[in-house]
Image (cartoon, rainbow, N blue to C red; front, top):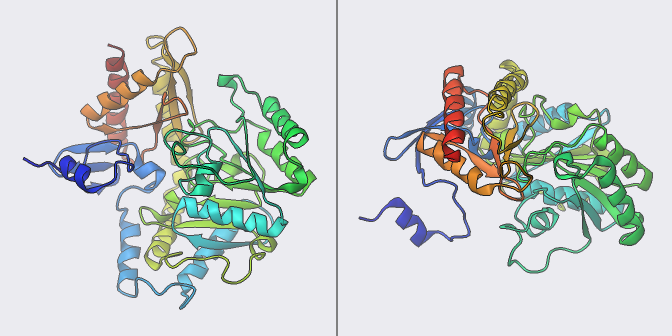
Length: 422
């Protein structure tokens, strides 16, 4: 008998990796049912996409209303008001007390690509600085900026020019904020003239890299360095955005405004849309036609994004993210005495992670980490791993997860961690 997995293997490139063999049939809020009728609690949220839950009624109503109007004209050919209105909303919401403008694209990688284009055009400089462990997409510029070789860079040939990587400040792994700043100063003395650098791009909390948060004061230091050398600061908020960290944008935790902010994932509530919002004079630098795309700012996705912003505000999801994260971290902290493999529990809001090392040491333990994921899946809970060494479990449930479902998931997480040690 031919299974869906057999069909997938025969039809789809193996380069498209799959975390599970769960084939979704329907979903509601924080739950997914597969083709066989099995029910799963979703602690992945499509990698931080459905922060407002699968098929939130308000998001679905907005999309249905737009379906009855039109689905595509290409904004660059026949524009539409809700694109303009969404840009106005993001200009007001993105951190920064200065005039802003916005463009829309389709994916997070496109947002990053466009931010780099804009930064280079505005400054007239080619160089970009990013960080080890960062993730910025799978396009050539995206994977060049990304600080993780496997599986993103391996075998794809030369990367883009004029991209430089710094160590990310991570006390757990022996890199202080001062170490990272010193590495930047050394880079400017040994490898690249700062006058050739257009921008520094950074995730306020590294996503794929392991959910490591920028330490207090570090973002302000980057801001000072960018101002000193005439560079732009780009905040990649693709995964951190839209209430995930307890604020609408993670940069709000740092009291620092980026010149350009990239976003995607949670903005569309399940529909593909991304954006770059930044200083008006910077965003206006490229010539007409230099930015855009056929599907950029699709009307259905724009309608969904308006509803997502409404839901976040009306249901106070930023505050709920903080409460959910506190409960999860408290539950995990209660395991530390009996699970010596737990090296760290972290994350702002409900962007949380637990890192596993070999018991009694600092050697990463990806084997146990994957066993935790597998044990959870057996029990009906979908989890994701991450980290350069694959030894981190990240928790990305919808912020709308019902309390009863959340409690059930916490029990499964504890059971799975204990079972993975056996």
